[in-house]
Length: 329
Image 1 (cartoon, rainbow, N blue to C red):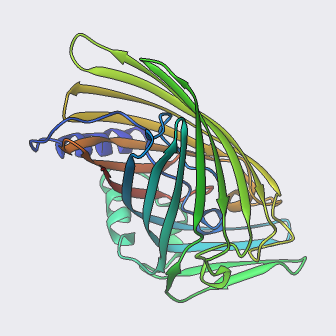
Image 2: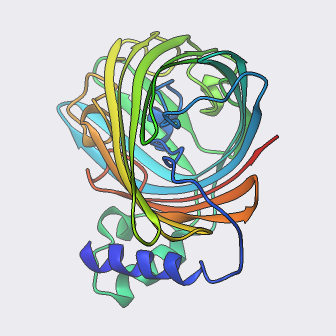
């Protein structure tokens, strides 16, 4: 695992040699992309500072995640083998002093993908285990679950469609020179399709606190950020009899900007178990490490580049590649 983290960090750092412009350190907007977790509306890390009145900002993100795991115990059987692509357009607007509103518009693809061979070869090259991948065919999609209680789901073909749209509001309650904090409320609507794993078929409501502390340095700057959230999960249509109706989540990150156009970042994201299950894939807390950075592409434009690793094995996607282009108007 350590070798894998160091290699990804080196690859990302090497990609940040292009000329660019100023950058602000802010959290990665990442989440758990394992299909049974993706469909739920847990809060995603947001900047602790909200937009000023009349200020409009946008973020176009693309996440590609790969998972290959299977397990059976206590009368439950699960297979999660496939690739998930999520394109999300996030819009934020400063509605009034200290008040920001926003919307997230996702499009989700559940796919056979193409990364299985690359990931297995990467593991072999550096002596890392492939675990359940050795028992599975390459580049297939198979999301399947069944239990003695009659709960089940099955998706064995590629699908795509609109995901669950999110409506957001944030209130700035601390805004000092080098520190900020805000309270964020999110409503996730059931616009996706549970049969396609583009949504849960239910409403979710979350409340989160986001905070950040900046540290000016003699050369560059550094930042620490974090957040805590709670979510009420509707039963929905994905294993509705096993859904945990309350979930906790959080994130903790740090960034360093050695020069004004480059920020290097690490972030941990976690959430409690979302289902009542003995299986690691759906019944244990997730812990995800995202490594990467931000490139300033213009005075008001930046690009986040990150790679996510599952530190709680099988509870989240094995690997997630994250790109996010942000622009303020």
